[in-house]
Structures are given as structure tokens and as C-alpha cells.
Image (tube, rainbow, N blue to C red; front, side):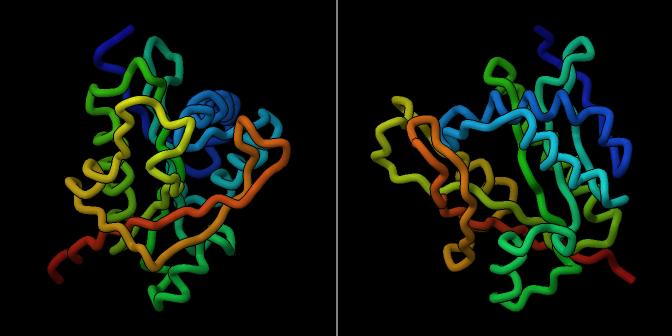
Length: 202
């Protein structure tokens, strides 16, 4: 295991080549708390193909000896699904000013090396270069006493706040998926976090 994985940034249709690796990574990482997601490779590949349809989509890869061990995605909010766009419309935020971050997934053994910060920085730089003034993402809402929460579990809220993101309690959406201990999919609340970036001087 390398303590300094290679970072690679890819865009648009070039994302297609890494879809199999991204699908496997999402399925592995999202089984962990707080998502507890029981995904399928077929669904993951179908979902990830969305990123290949926009020339402004971005995927930041972390690789160790050419193996994908982490990834973070992003695309214009205007090209996202209705359930992602709805809270921004309700709040009166212009969709064409927002770049939306999808997942940020990293194998457990590589955490704590600063890769998460790199994922955020690379996506923000891409968004600013494309002219977006707001970056945003959402995270699942789980109760503090959830029975599957690991001992000493700490959410990433303090990390997100430290790098300039603000939780928006009034911006909630729901996604459906099947938890590991569920017999069928159920709705999960997702709360949004946003960061406003100063526009460059004219």
C-alpha cells in the first residue's frame, strides 16, 4: 500500500473507461455506515454512465499501482435528477450557478492521508474554471443512536465545515435504496451542504 496514491482527473466521455472500477468501489464503500447500501454492479454501471453524457462532468481518481482505491465525482446541477434539483429550486438558487458533487468514496485503509481534501480541491477547481459560483453535495441523515453505527463513529460534518461548507437544514431530498438489513428499498433523507465561491475580479 502506498501512502501517496496517484491522483488523476478525467472528464466527460473519458469517464466511460473507469466505470467498472468505480462501480465496484461504490458497492464496497457504500456498504459501510452511514449508507449501509446493498447495491448491484448492474445498477452502479447504469448510474455512472450519467457522468459520461456531460462534457463538464469530472471524476477525480486515486490510484495505487494503477488500482482505483478512491474516487470523487461531480457534474453541473442543471444536468442532475429532479430530486437533486428540487431543493435548490425551492430555495430560489439558480441551477446554472451550482456544480454538484456526487460521491466521494475511498477504501478504508487509505483514509487519513489527506485524499478527501484533494478530492474536494480538485472538484472545486474544476467547477470554478467552468464558471460556477456554488458547489454543493448532500449526505444521508441517520439518527445518532442508529443500531448499526460503529463505536466511536464520527460524521464528517466538522471536516466539511472546516473547508467552507454550510449545512442547509431546510434543503432536504430523499433517495431510495435497500439497506443491508432491509427486505425492500426505503426512502432515506439527504441534507444538502453548500459553499459559495467569490467571483474573480472583472
